Length: 316
Image 1 (cartoon, rainbow, N blue to C red):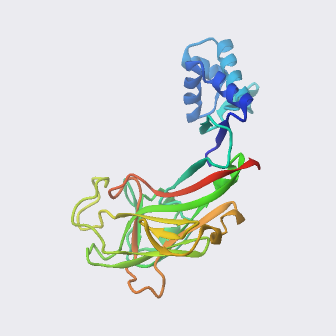
Image 2: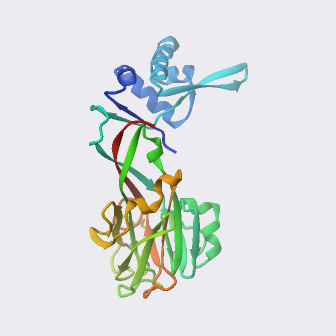
Image 3: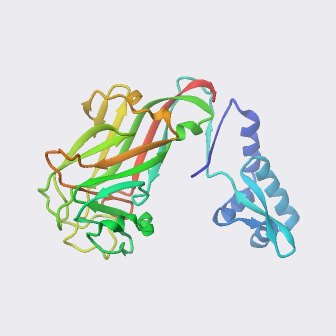
């Protein structure tokens, strides 16, 4: 999981340490180099064509700002100190934490990173290079290779994802105001059928959040992001659909669909948030679904969760 650090004017020592560490351009190059793999100071110095002593001083500055960590690993002649980047993102807020500051945490989940599923023919998975095994084999949804999937489809059932609850990672107590889930999707018919309706429901932590009726399975033109091998006659693109649950109700594509509020989802009861997408067994239109990732369809995104919050003041 990505590690973020959050800084503001209420933490001046940490803020200025990061500023000092990043004030020298070559240190940004060091972070770039070790983001690919951990390296020793000697290896870093060799790549940058600088003395090892100078490299060690730069690494020390990054370490003091908690941007780099040093690990001892066995070597051919004793242990070797390896440098590894310790932070993926820095959020700097040039205000004191107050109860009036709003923000959004955005988490993007790959299509193939689901944690549970129930699928039926017609079904399948693919990535940008080809099908993952064969069409219409339910057992393929449990292959290790499924994590590579950039598109998946099933004639009914569900797919479930477990998102990290990063509200717990914030350095201050936060009040969650809104959760949103967006994905490109459409119905699933054999081949494609623009008149094939499907009632697609979203659940969060087992709570039903609303049902969107898709008009069909779209394949009359090529999706904007589809790889070259993806042939005509297959599903090509979907509609970007957004569920939102706020303190005032539940919405789909900005249309209110119910009185469910965010307090009823039990978000703060767990360090994970379970999101399920699928057809209810008693739905009027059980027309399956396609889920599109970045390499397919019309939208360059996977499944995106947004957590909108405001600071309640004080530290965790």
